Length: 447
Ligand SMILES: Nc1nc2c(c(=O)[nH]1)N(C=O)[C@@H](CNc1ccc(C(=O)N[C@@H](CCC(=O)O)C(=O)O)cc1)CN2
Ligand SMILES: Nc1nc2c(ncn2[C@@H]2O[C@H](COP(=O)(O)OP(=O)(O)OP(=O)(O)O)[C@@H](O)[C@H]2O)c(=O)[nH]1
Ligand SMILES: [Mg+2]
Image 1: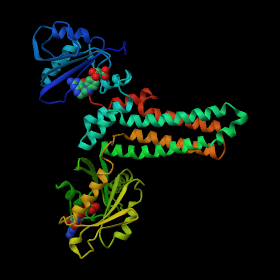
Image 2: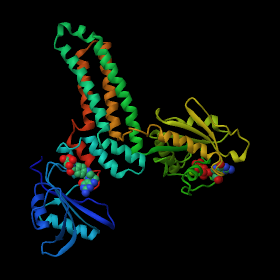
Image 3: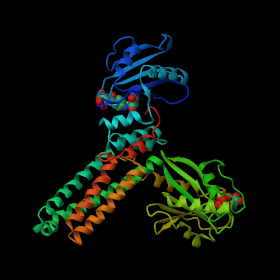
């Protein structure tokens, strides 16, 4: 337990009127604050019905008082909960009372940060707590819950175990310089490294999916001006979200609209039509359109029969892991072939954003992409985790080069050391104050 810490307090429930609201307090002053609020020693982990009073003995509220002595509490410290009526005014008064009894206001995420520092949760689990709270889809919430339960961390730890085993092998070889090359040529080392790299690649795929479950799937709608991008966004969203006109260059800024398909969130982004332009505003819009494309999970190119062949060039900049869909729009105007097809990993669909014909096929395809891998066992993750795994990937590539091409044990060992460090940053085995600050400050207060 962190005995030196001060005592923190915050309203732990959402803003606005609600049936019940809670103030949470954590730290060494909790037993004294609890006794003061109850008028006697509270029984640990027992629901007391209590009259909460201010310093002058005036009634603030009647509610439930819960006392969890550390270390068997959420933070690992002594924790007090005052559950009153869900009124912002009463909860503020309750919080002020705790402050007057010696607590200070908690920073965002500080309760969970203490839980992490006291070993109740690792860093990835702590991040998942915030993701559970902010989840906007059912699949996202379930996945975040799995990460909070440690499913993702366990996968990272397995990999860490494999990595350390390999490191031990190679470090041992270096300790015998005369026989180093023989040691390094041991097929077991090669096999261990190959297995490690395979397992890392598998985890990377699942972690990228975890980010999509958390943040939603980023869908960029791109194409030439007047192709019908904004019309398509409106049709998918089922509302007149975007301005549609027959003037080329109508959309300037990126317009976002979230839709949910089978419990998964898709973040649709309608963008400015791509073309050469002298207009400063339009050029900035086009730059933003390209930026959307570069960070999307699904790229939808809207075009028409006449331009479909040349417009595929607009896919340029789409990340390799992203799905690509060509939508041949405006089929109501002509007799285009309405048979959907796919080639070279690019799906091609014919539809009319105006009449809605063919739209269900696009929804079906998006649903398939959205729910792929969102089922049993899927966990949530953050971009930070993907970046860390990509760094591990690079170090393992260099480890392989060092071992196989140059039999350089020292180099391989150093790469593995750095790989271990990057991997350890995910669960917080290695973490800097800067990293912790960045993570926990993004939580809501009281979490
Ligand atoms: N009233 C209330 N509801 C809540 C929370 C809370 O803090 N208060 N939670 C807050 O996020 C979540 C539940 N999470 C919790 C996690 C651990 C412990 C806890 O006391 N852990 C101890 C004891 C474990 C046990 O008895 O088995 C421990 O880990 O040692 C409490 C709540 C959701 N609901
Ligand atoms: N007939 C027909 N017209 C369509 C269809 N989809 C869009 N349009 C028309 O095409 C014109 C341009 O549509 P928008 O949705 O504004 O096109 P955009 O791609 O967003 O255009 P910019 O924002 O300028 O890049 C409008 O007049 C729409 O009504 C369609 O399926 N059939
Ligand atoms: Mg538009």
